Length: 189
Image (cartoon, rainbow, N blue to C red; front, top):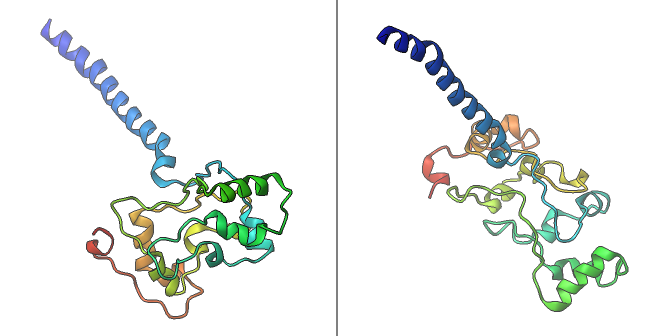
């Protein structure tokens, strides 16, 4: 009798249990991947904004809207007054510009949804990277061609370390670039 129970456990229950554990792990890994690495994340924004038109066709520099990126840790998300520098006279009759004007006139911040985000436990300074000549597209993708901005690269420790360890491969447009720091305290403060 004991041998039959043991045989049942070893032949059926153990493999079934191991299969359920493995399947759960694999499913969780793949289902949660977009949340982990963010690739493809493109939330609907409160105002439709075309980077393809503004940064691409009109060739407006990233730093015009994302002010302070050369001086601050954060790139900052543009406020309505930056948009209104042009849109107080340009295309005022378009529905999205009318919505923008309402935010501006009411003094309310536009509730933009953040797309690119480094985890809270990691320190990242935009100004250090921008001032070294690293192009925004190296991390954010070719935003100049995006009607709707989405995350195209992982913002993970591996992605950062890959670039820090081999900057000549990842940033071929830079003639003089040093290997970035790899010590834990550079990013985990």
